Amino acid sequence: MSYPVYMLFNLWGDSFRTFIIALWMILLLLLLFLLGHRYIRDLNYQDRFLAYGGVLALSAAIFFNICFYEPFSFSRGIQAYDIGVYPEVAAIVFANHIAFAVCCLVTYLIFREVFASEWWGIFGLATLVAGSSYLFWSGNAKDHMLTILFFTIVVYFFILFLKQGSYLHLISSFIAVGWVAWVRPELGLTLAIGLVLLALFFAYRRGFRAALTTLVCSVAILFGALTLLLNNYGLTGHPLTLPWMTVEVDQGLSAMVNTHYTVQKIEIAANLYHIFVNPVFENASGIFQISPLSFFAVLLAVTLGYLLITRTAVHLEPLDRRYIITFAAISAIVIFAYLRSLPGLGISPGINPDIRYLSPLYLPLTGLGLYALKLIDFTERDIITSLKTLGALAVTVLPLAYVIQQYLWPSSLATQLTFLMWLSYSFLAVAAITYLLALSKRLKTEYVAYALPIPLLFSLVWESVVDFRFATVGWEGYHFWIPLVQYVWYMQYHIFPF
Image (cartoon, rainbow, N blue to C red; front, top):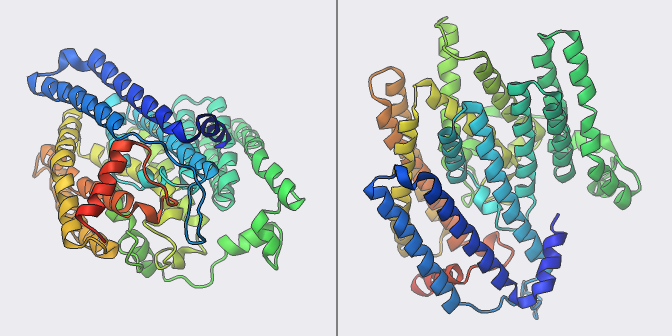
């Protein structure tokens, strides 16, 4: 996947940063042009002031990037302890940048299709990027971002299948399942079985012919998994034998089943607490801390459960019910893929800065959280209010909160994350109470629009801490591509040394 980028880096050599800066500036200029062409006539004077301020900020960024420019050295490490900078790993890092950008586009399309609104699509994208670890995984040489991209494509085409009923979309979704299996076989196998069963569940009511057609479409999974099968054959000599199985006593497909799906003893409550709320390892964070909308998914489940028990009418369209079932089922599939590993996910020191193997969960849980907001008649006006509030907090409070933490605990990642955990859960509790009051018609939804961005803000602070202050922990020893960002990064270590 990263080979074309590797060839590009070899073409530019140590001056490839010139290409990166030019591409970055062109994309920002294009974004400002498109926003201005599309919305400038509808903006008030305050919004126009912000738009023109963005143009001036971009001009200043271009100027400082030229001033601070220097070649990006690809020299290898001289000493054994020197990580060095290798072109092939740099290519993987940049390929993850591209995967993140494509993932953002597909995420927007998912929520736009689900809620039939551009603003809901933008809001879903903003809450997912702010309330997930996707930004972190987009900047290192791990494979999690690629897994997330293929997983997002699976969800997108399955949503299109539910909405339009086209089996071509279902086939596309199944092909993408094979791609997921190529990157993460344990997740791909579970996703293949679970998604086929889910598709058959929806097809069952339309008759035997629809169910049979759905079953035939599932053959596309094998087509998508050709990359996995060929890779296995080339490395192990057998298409169903994964490379890591060659060092196991129990080789073959049964090895993966025994490793990932058989369960001996699981303390469900304790394990879920460590995964979703507070991991044992102090340098890791729980899913609810990073993704406030994931907690709103729990509120949705409780609300719908209460309405069903009390036999209260639920005003949801049939298609919306399918979407909710899909998001919930896909969330369960991701958890089931790591069922045997469940006891160790929340206590392992190697799983940080979040529960990274469950990172695909952020997408379906965010979808459920957005449906929780839809349940209280959260309008596009509330979305705009929430986005403006989050933007204002990100510009003003985010840098201040970051600087305060570096002043107080400059060398302690664990202390900073613990502090952020308590702040995040405190304001998440406030947002949840506000939501419940709005659900009971005791508050306007406008209060939820103001309360929700605050825990999202602390998710962004978390991102800045793990991704900027302690970047060398997960960035494979790389500094940043953009010269101005790299200069600020070095400057913080001079002001707040370890």
